Length: 117
Image 1 (cartoon, rainbow, N blue to C red):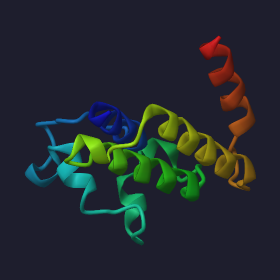
Image 2 (cartoon, rainbow, N blue to C red):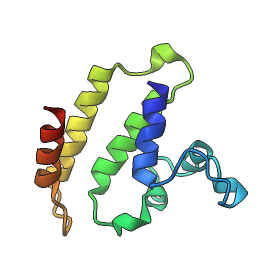
Image 3 (cartoon, rainbow, N blue to C red):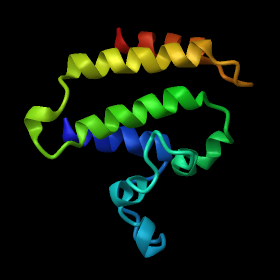
């Protein structure tokens, strides 16, 4: 489950877990994202710049919180995959309710459903 939390942050940020070509403070993804908690005003700093702010912030925050729960030190404190799936469904609902320009959550959802078949 811990690795899934890393993957979620890689998706949100568009970065790999370790990038030695970045400034020292940004090389380790998890150390860097800890500086910008999902509930903070500065959270959007970690988001993949290629998204150009065309995403629902509530969904991004929800996914970051899911990632944080996967990254808890004690494995027993981490969520089950069923809990993660429910959390991702909630994030998808935030996307569907968003009025963000160019937000095409329905198309993304259709592709996701097709891939899972």
